[in-house]
Amino acid sequence: MRPDTKVVSLRYRTAPGAAALQWLSPEQTAGREQPFLFTQSQAILARSWIPCQDSPGVRFTYEARVRVPAHLLALMSAENPQQLDPRGEYTFRMQQPIPSYLMALAVGNVEYSSLSTRTGIYAEPATLPTATHEFVDLENMVAAAEELYGPYRWEQYDLLVLPRAFHLGVWKTRV
Image (cartoon, rainbow, N blue to C red; front, side, top):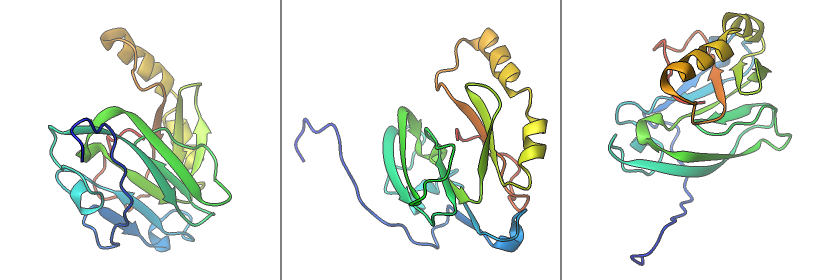
């Protein structure tokens, strides 16, 4: 590689048994019909599913193409789609440098509910109305934080409500 190289493109596949990949069976979801995948890259598990320098001091931007079954929606810690792609192909772009532990992927029977022009909720169809109601004040929360700390830098602030089988309680990764 030349010393002036600024971009490196990688094409790879991960293994289903990677430690960061959390697989839920259909029975573990609200709809009980489709499986669900989410990643847990903290503290040093990003290296198990993506080729990276897995250290909090190393930050990177990324672009990713993810192909999933057409009836499932893929989301990442990046700009996200709000609707299913009929081919199941999604492209993601994270422009702000992030540490590897914030690299995230979720795939499942998920729908989107917009709360404002810059906030919204992703959740399974069975839980989306409740999740939307629970976070109806999300825009006000972001505005209050901006009054204290300045403008939100990442434009869109969406939350993903994971299935109840999610065992950790909090997913702070930008989705």
